Length: 256
Image 1: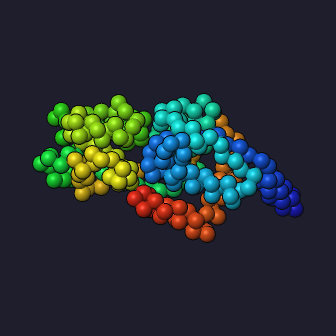
Image 2: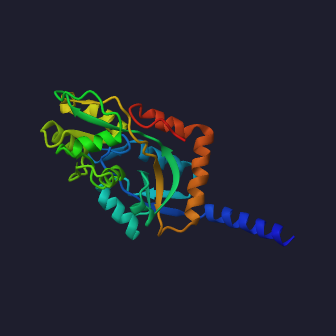
Image 3: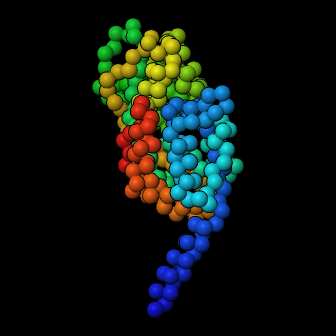
């Protein structure tokens, strides 16, 4: 009897929490197709996901997506509690300290781009990529990314001075590194946008998978998690999540 009463109370408490207004602070970053920032307007996979979450949970408001921050500043905000939620971040031991990973949304793979005049035709695995870099040919990689940390752990020589994908493409073209290591859908999106993209090519091998998540700061109350889980479950059941991912045809469509 006592257990039944307790279960009912917990159910009522969960229902009450879901009915309460909740505002979560976020930001964007210029990383097409997850965020696309043009003339002060923000679109992309993550804004679409935020819109769907708010449509399902009508008492949930996600504010601040129009504010563009660099990846290190996003991490700092999530760590100190000035930001509450973010979309499409990967796991790392460093982030484990200040994040809760609520929902896996995609499983992109890592690829390598080189200049078109580079004689290399393929790289068979991560070990070979690391060895090639150690000869004095840096791997250009986005600063603050999980995969930059991974390459450093493996002993690779890297250039991780910029958070800007466009800057990193320019570095490759200008021979400031031999390899550009990034998520497959980032490079596919750049292929459509960058005039200089015709000067590089993507090698055929896919490297490690890099799952990405909707995350919240550990400073956010745990009650938030259930609301995000419930809304995401509905999105999966109705097919809306798959529709959002498929909308960005050059982007992540391999959803869990």
